[in-house]
Amino acid sequence: MIAIVGAGVSGLAIGWRLAQAGRTVTAIDRGPAGRGASWAAAGMLAPQVEAEPGEEALLPLLLESRDMWAAFAAELQSATGIGVGYRTEGTLVVALDRDDREKLRFRYDYLLGLGLDLEWLAGAEARRREPHLARGVTAAVWSPKDHQVDNRRLVEALRAAFAAAGGTLIEHAPVEEILHDGARVAGVRVADRTIPAETVIVAAGAWSRNLGGLPDAARPPVRPVKGQMLALAMDPAEPLIERVVWGPDVYLVPRRDGRLVVGATVEEMGFDTRLTGGGMFELLRAAWETLPGIYDLPLVESWAGLRPASRDDAPILGPTEIEGLVMATGHHRNGILLTPVTGAAIARLVLDGTAPPSIRPFSLARFAAKGEDRIGPRNRAAPVSESA
Ligand code: GLY
Image (cartoon, rainbow, N blue to C red; front, side, top):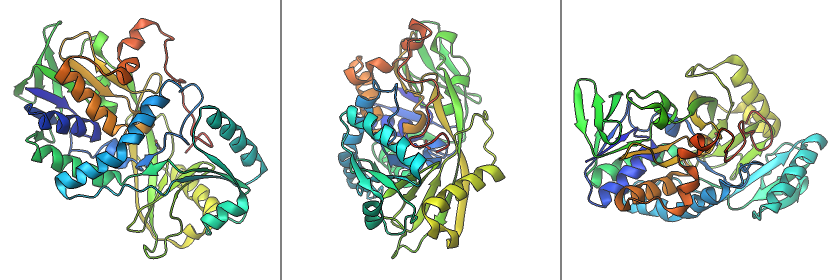
């Protein structure tokens, strides 16, 4: 028996793979499945434009998962009949004045040095590709391999695939305690019920650190990083943009149904998910400066989510000192992108007893090894500015 604490996209993808392999799996979520960071996300699959100095060791894992996405989306569709809106039009990062242009050029040179597939465009060429961009666009970086998926459809598809493969889902049930004897995991306690398990996988996002029963050595250093977002409604027959667009302080993600997802703030506010006037104002201002046509669009939704950020902003994937207790958390800005590799690699670890090489650098043990043994920078900035 395997228990997965947290039924977001990571927990469901791991559960799906393990159930497909014939294992008995129960995923338990404190709320409805997939309604935390998985639901709040924008669905960008953007290892190239989101790559940051200091995270070079994380890049191969991001690219590996990016390369799994087309087959993963197709497999989910054939397993469930649910399309996840995987789109491959690419991503454009635009500069709006000379200052932005210089910053973008500096980033571009850095990203090219990592061997990434990017192209520098003049402002006029960027506007030829996306005619509704602001007239003042001075330059852009074109990233053909940064794609997107509709993360909410992904939640629905993974939930259906997990159930169809025989997985059990328990919702609205906070896990109160991870049960173990100090050496080996024994299960979880949910309200007045004990669920015995020889493997327990912690995939509880921002809540992973606070789970009861975890010994200090197996407590993942994960904190919530708030992101406020909003959605506008475009005419699906005449969308303002076809590609994902990053402007200074904002990203804009067009969906096929006309929804335009606008994000996101990056705030250290604990578990506070309230929307603020300032957060909404800054997003709308930055979106309008990049794509003036949004001014007239209906505002259809606003929300905030909590990114699960680890101490070095890289995910925590792999075994712990407690036998049978496995971590799959701390995905921070890359949870949707890393879903295929997290599902496959953690399932492999459970089935074979060995972590695949690509996730070995990301075990919890890296934090215990020495305080400064870090995969990436302590506070990661957005591609073009601090607040996107
Ligand atoms: N990956 C986008 C965000 O975290 O806002």
